[in-house]
Structures are given as C-alpha cells and as structure tokens.
Picture 1 (spheres, rainbow, N blue to C red):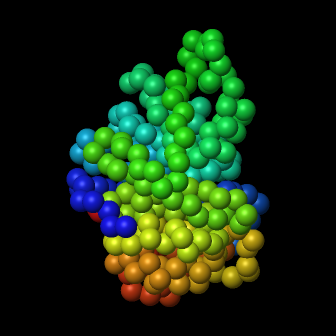
Picture 2: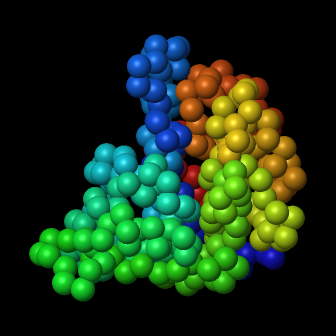
Picture 3: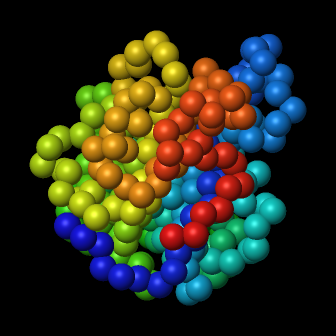
Length: 261
C-alpha cells in the first residue's frame, strides 16, 4: 500500500518517554541528572498538523503540560493507540478544547469500551455542566479514516500479547509500544518515507517493547528514508551519546522536536 499525496505535514513530538517518564522518580543516574533538555522526556504523544488539520496522537498524563506552550486551536481528531494509562490519562484535560465543539476520539474497540468504563461521566445519558464533550469512534484496522485533509489508515502491531493500533498517514507511519508485527500488516508500511517507532532501551529484553537494536532492524526492513525513535526509558542513555551510535537516517526524537513531512 502506498500512501496518497496529501498536504504538507509537520509532526511535533510532545513527549518521547515511556510510562514513567524521564527523569525516573528516585533515580540518580547520569541521564536522570542530565541538564540537556533532550534528556527530559514526558510521556509519549505527538501532534500532526497540516495548514488546515490538527491531530493528536495519544493523550497521556502529561498532556496539559505538553499543550500549554502551543497555540490554543481545535483538534480535528485524537487518535489513540491503546488503553494504557500513559496513552490515555490526559483525556479529561481535553475539556478546554470542547469550547470549539465536541472532540472526536478514534480508538480500537477494546480501547473504546474501556474508556466508557474508566470515564463514565463523559458518556452518560445526562452529562453534568463542564464535562468534556467527546465523540468516541471505533477505528477499525485496515479501514481508512478521513480527518480534514488527511487519510488515516489504522493497522495492528502487537504490544506483547495485546493488539494495538498504529497509523499510516500519507508517507508517515507512527508506531509506539510495538514488540512484534504480523507479516500480514507489513503491506501497510510499503512506501513509508518517515517512520516513527518505539525503542525502549539499549539492553535487557522486555516482554512487550522493542529494544534499540530491534527498532533499528525494523527500520531497515521497512526501508524508510528516515526513522525517529521514541518511547524511551532513561536506559536509552544520554541523547548526545546514544545519537552517535545510530546508523545514518535513524534519529532519537526528543520532546519539542518538529519534523517536516
């Protein structure tokens, strides 16, 4: 599958940390003590924009802090990869954006169902004044979603044993929390120019996340012109040092980085 040509896009990494963020609470390693702002990592999220469309990719517990420095403009959609706390815990903080109208949230069936349980006050029959106005939509794998001038294609990656969503948008593929991917999903990565992919740390195998070497190998398999790594623990090492061991075309993302697509 090759993505259709769309308006110029830009992607801003709002957060590039794993579930605990960096620095890690109680840790005094050189990464957690670093004064380099690229070593300060909020929970993983990103903002995708064109001149007319604005899409939030995941909405974790740091959303309020991430969004405050940016322009107060409406979201055309919020795309959720899965239900884990570090990807959805900021949804209540979307409520100021509801002054523009209800916010459309797209998630797979399991995440949609879980949100109705964890945030019942947002989806009852009689909503109290001030509650976030959220329109929940099921994002079915392999069925495109039209959001403004963007076409979003959800596909499946495996977060350990949990199937979660990844997103193909034009020549961009955005993947987080992946451990493996079924061969049947690989056609959705054909023609990808820019790949965003998770790389938890350098060593010590994890049951549901890729390590740095796994992410680099996957980037080579996809053949993207450039790959940005995200969703790090402090065990990824200092940004300045780890960046020097990466192959050409592979980069460590950092909070606040904006790339043109």
